[in-house]
Length: 337
Image 1 (tube, rainbow, N blue to C red):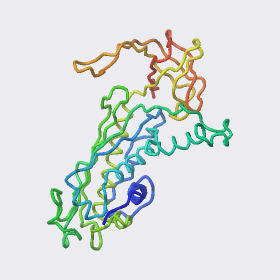
Image 2 (image 1 turned 180 degrees about the vertical axis):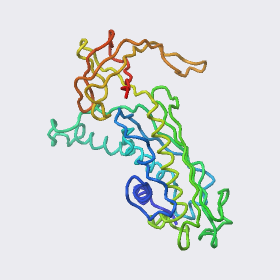
Image 3 (image 1 turned 60 degrees about the horizontal axis):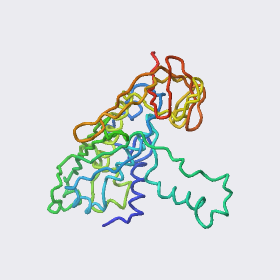
Image 4 (image 1 turned 120 degrees about the horizontal axis):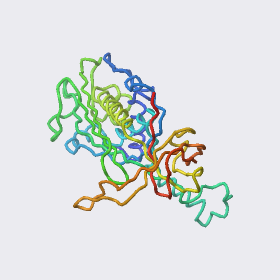
């Protein structure tokens, strides 16, 4: 049983709703349900958020035959949705909806550049060239996807699973995720999530054959539960790691010591009074293969935000010389407790 592209999109949204603990909806969990993600992340986070674009997650090639029997074209879109939705709710990142970018650009071109643009009141339409860039890209790969096959193969033809691994009385799912710095391509944070769920925790028989058409049923299986838990484990590890990354932004313009404009605002949870260390960006330092590994930076004082707008902020210099030009960098100064 195969899914259409529209059904695959529905699956991605549906699984995210049915499977992610943070969403508050979904199938009844087994008896050993771990605490929700919020309870596993120590303390509340109220600092600047990282602007993240979501890249493609890699499928586990060995599971192709298994997924065909289940009625799925792939698990990566669903798990990507789970990780993204859960991570946003930790308040550590602001996700750029790259998956919907084509629709947004198409509508923008319709209103600004098409033959019908004259029918739109131009002062009410968005400006072209106003999209913000990502600071990092979230990528990942499914490393384990192993169903339980007890009870008559759980409806699966075990002889046709190809290279897929499986177990008699447990399901196993593993996920690796990475945040890659947009500017340099360096991995700045890596995390993993794995879960093993025993069939003994579930009441009734479990069947996977063609289950792609029944999201509620998938959520009640050991494999569906393992998928949700693995995603949540990855979210918790990733969220904790993100806090250790010094938040960095860029200087848009400088019009004096009391007028320093930086490229983030309320969209990334910046607040008046936040302080940033100014770094004057020097020449790029490259390795033998020509890859940028860093910059010849010079610290040049501290600025403090005096005004925070939707997508930019204005700051004043409170220590040192401050930035001198657009392109200088600013790094968040964490306040002492």
